[in-house]
Length: 201
Image (cartoon, rainbow, N blue to C red; front, side, top):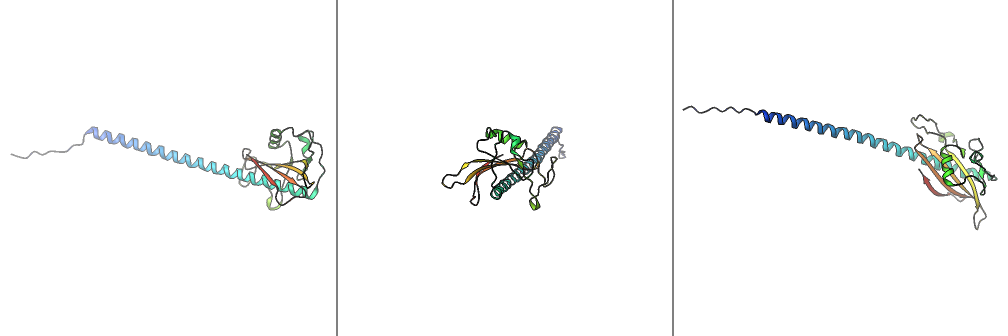
């Protein structure tokens, strides 16, 4: 009696299952790759935005320092500011100092808005190594607009008789959404370093 010869034949059902499983695996891998690509792009945008906000903050701080030095060098007489237009001299780097009793600003919110829309304060245009390049279309090492500075006399420091000033500066990074507003109280004669009251982004 001859032994039976058995030939192993793959089942069509198994072949179909392997094909479907392979396709599903390929889809999953593709989705993971797309998600990773999108995630890296989002992280890059977040990093860029944080970098531009830090640039804006640094420029705003430099603007405050300019204002403090300018006050020390000039000790200007404050004037009554009736509105936002009265708060700038239309001459860069020559701030107007408003009196404590000025009608403007009526409140902090109005001042912040007017500074950001460039309708209040004086333009600060640093020169030399600190010079800024303006471009509203973006670009490497550019900023959206020149920083602005608002100064108001707020009275006399108790015990010293020194005049007190509130300085508010606004600055931008590479676009209009990366904006920083910082504020400090400064006394004349000034001690090294004014008190920084914080910043608003």
